[in-house]
Image (tube, one colour):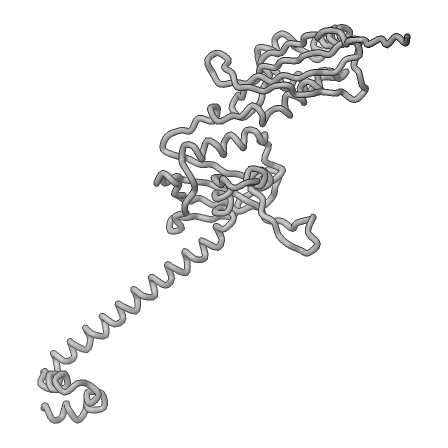
Length: 319
């Protein structure tokens, strides 16, 4: 039996080392068959494991490529490089109706509470088509992101891809339409608000206050202030007396200068004070606004208009 097995199997046993070939020749047919099946099964199992791992790596590489816009956004969210704040604000689609000051406060809050973004867990990432209001079809990504304080935070980022109208060639740009971070402990936005980021909103209120239809200023008032001025007419009448007190506006185009912006508190909650000077014909008016954020909305809680001293008149007498 041994010689027969050797002849039949010599085509491949002959290539094995002598001790191994001798051992195989001495095996019964049943044991040899079992060994062959077991070896083949082990080889197939190893091949399966290799293929699964390769497929998993390929899937993660594909996810990494598709998650590129979300990763780039989170890097920009916690970047401390010069000019990163402007690039962060320009990353959003026009349909995102959040004030720049609110977005910058969110950015400071994430950096202070979570730290710098490090990487994404691609294994549990989910990408799906979505539709953003005012932006059309978009991509929504849900994943876990690791930040500098070794905190895994569930994240959602949605974006649209469109052609760049300012580029000479047909390049594509990515604009963020939505982002949401859900850390285990809630983050407080108000301590990270910088009043200087809202100076343009205060100027917007003051400019509207001197219009014949101050609808914008009225819409920016908080609930308590709205009770004092229930309609535009009542607020307009109030502003008429201010204009008379300064002898009329100095220029047809309103000249407004922000003189100060500072953090304060209103009812023990973080708020801000914004101060402006409006140029008048006889005297200038000092405007002081007490403002706060209700959620993500900027509101004017109270305001005062104070007429300053009359302009000095210099008289030159020739001798």
